[in-house]
Length: 529
Picture (cartoon, rainbow, N blue to C red):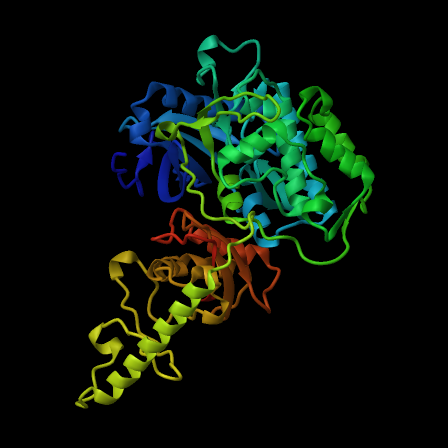
């Protein structure tokens, strides 16, 4: 991959000024920007230089802009302009959205109440119905491409994103629009319809299937088809039957009518699914408010591999077959895969218990190390007290004493990183809120990101009504494998204020903790208003 030049401050086509990078996609980067003449805030997607050297990717990028612009629906992100920079970089301009995607909401809430699920899915149906009417099949419908913004009193107003791998089936499209080779499929593994996964001919009903997967996930808190690898998931999609929601999440009761709808939309035979998005939309709205309700307990935790696959785009890959009971033979082509998924161990299989002899050996080794440390304490010659870590910059080392005391260490701030002025932010992490999964991970990257984001967060908190000087503590989620900040939940007295949580996510967009944690990592952090 070639080095990407810094685009901040660059003016594109004499009309748009790039402000900062806020995200990274499969083919390009997404930036906050503004129209120079009218001052309108916009989002700008710019094709990467290495992608610009591949004509097929350039055409796919331009097609994404054309496809998005042709739909013209309130629940589809609006494409405003397209062009080429003086440096030869293709770009297109979209409306600026403030909110969060459904994947981030799912990660935080696990499940949603049925009336809320119905309202969100109904908007997705209307958006896709408009796309299908114009001959556009999305082909990559998933929670990460369903963006939620505040619109009046509606906190869940849907904007459908990312038509980068959409299939054009309109009769007026030229054959050159077919940019995917025969036998290859593109999409996100858990949301692929069986005919798409098998490389068979498909139509708009693959989007209906994907909507059914999202519906199941929102109610159950887990995906209907699971596995440790994308290959295993695809085998289940090709030959398995979806479970009932109550089998995955016993705490949820689902009415027979809603269960029947789920079985219909997730049917392996496309002819058994609703005929179109309008039919699915009407079926959802006909169900009563009590079609699904919580009876007891909590939603199950999704496995690490499930989260990774649900957030990734896999493709293209070679198609297999749909013979029942036969391995599909799908082979990932990692050389051209937009996102490579590294599969961590999951909780799908029961964890193996450690053998007693090994555990005993570890205990004995720990005892010996402890005795050696205590002996060293008494035998070590006494001298002048050493300088503190804060004074000499040394990294504090934990010693095996009976009651260790955590000493705060001042961390130097590099002015070149444009961090906040001294006193502008309280860096006060709560160790009690670190999950076991996060222990042992490098944390300097997280603290650096929080420092760099402090100024933007403080400004956003002020716009959200937080009085200057008021401290707001957030529980922050760091995504496994990527290190991205995916969710931030304010604590009391600001609990439930989604706008404040969006402040942190927006301010850290385009950055990631390095090295990224191997499992989802939760930390708490405090910002000053």
